[in-house]
Image (cartoon, rainbow, N blue to C red; front, side, top):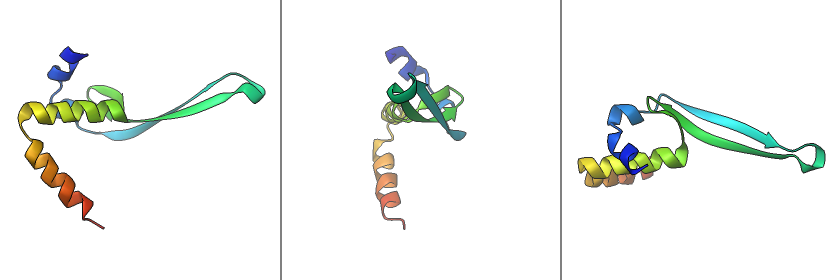
Length: 79
C-alpha cells in the first residue's frame, strides 16, 4: 500500500462523484446490513477514509500542509 500512496496524483484523487454500497449477510432475524460511503476517482471507487488518507499523503508530499490548514480554517467559518 505504501507504493500505491506515492503513485497517486491530484488528478487521480479528484472526486468525480460520491458513491455508496449496501451489503447484507444472513437471513431473517440474523440478517446484518451495512452501508459504505465512498468517492469515485480516476483511481477507482475509494472508501471515504481511504481517500482522505491518500489525499493527506499527497498534500504532505507536495508540501501543501499550510495551504490545506488555511482552507480548512476558512471552510469552517462558512455558513
